[in-house]
Length: 215
Image (cartoon, rainbow, N blue to C red):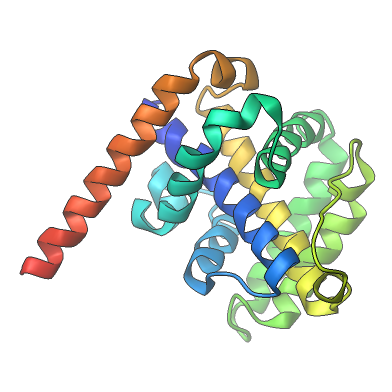
């Protein structure tokens, strides 16, 4: 699970959650299928591959696109999305050294998994449970992620819960990325290579789509 493609997919997973967070904060809505894939990753404990964590590489396309677009300025932290990504990476490192907090999150995800027998994954009941565990764990670590957006959207309870759940999914992707050999230092040093790899993977996914449509 430590190929270049694995690392790129996991990294794209972080970018996807950051982008969706930004979309909800500013617009009150976000791509439903991308949200589904990101939150789905929280429940994949023993996935056979990195792509399987998201239900297939095609489900992380938005993350790959944002990775490609944002990497040019990530070291400058010039965008909200880049700031969220870097902070998620930093918080995940802190979380990895806190076994009690990891267990608390694992227990909550286990409970949410049981509720999937009765509710769809994006049901407000599931989202609220995951948002609550984010608030009681990750949100207590520093630096806290300060989400900027329209006050009307941020003050909406459902939107706030979706944002917290997406950030929890971002932590999941950051953990996966680190397990695949990713690090912030390597990311900045190998920025051009990372962009190239993301673009290549996007081309492969587009080619796959075109072949499917042709059939």
